[in-house]
Length: 422
Image (cartoon, rainbow, N blue to C red; front, side, top):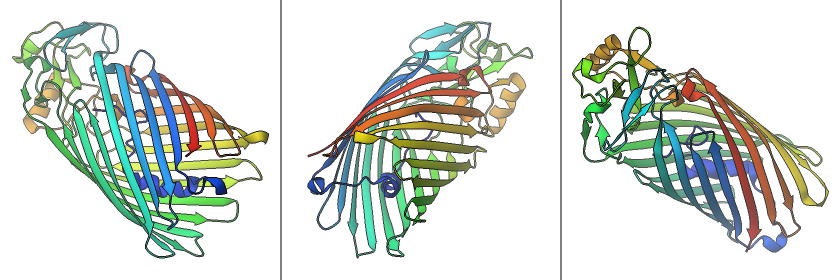
């Protein structure tokens, strides 16, 4: 399954369609009938962990009847090591590989599965067409496939222009069907990894989204957008490659054989995690863009709360300095903070394991469900030519901290982009 680089899933193309109301570039007359192509290559590298290379190409065309077609193709290549959920300990710990065919041992380090390797191909199609002079409809399809994960989705929505097109109301629905086929089978939650208790076949998850939005021109320099998103998912939410360490009173890992489990080595009391089979998220997003005489300020705030107990805040600020001859410089700062899920525990004791197994309750040590704070800062520099071609370079630094050693993370993000018309 794809590890999300920014901690959130960019879901429906519908959201992108509505958000484009804020960022639509002005097209020169000689490019009005041409396809606009935005291409980019992203390089993301975590220190001692995952490295991702992501080329993306998007083509968009506006037709004479004011309809618009957008096509997008993404290819992700991920390699490196991913945290397997266990604690960091000065005592040796033994784990099995995702397939269960081999074992590995870790001491005095964040336990990482260095067999992580995946390639994802994703395609999106979005079409928008006017019903009347003030009412437009939009519909889209999206498909994503990787080694152990397939996702198919569709969306539809309405955009209603009011107040001489100074106000736009948006309403949209989206559905996504995911199929997860874990390497080595789907582990039975709360059982010992050393027992390799897994079921054959794939697991399913469905996601339904509702979006309500308002885009408002405040004055000739200021435009804002306010979106509310309700997301409800049902099905398999567990990460089949994550474990939880069972520890003694000193916080040291125990042995699986002391619980009647299979002995594969020292510190092998590692159980498969178990998550709820449904999730409901409420998200509010507010973005403002202010155009000075030349420069542009963009400020966005996102609030999310779900029934897993997670609450998050995201603040995103960009300021674009526009220079002569088409050059621009855009510093960027993003701050993110989240609380932990109700069932998050970095490790559990033997008594807690008994209680969890008797009640079949949920538990996960995935640091992405714990308390987190991360900061991204950097800049984008680019050049625009008279024929609307653009070339840009983005360089950003990502720093994350949380309650566990595994959550401490630094990453470098670079992206080269090129826009042209054809």
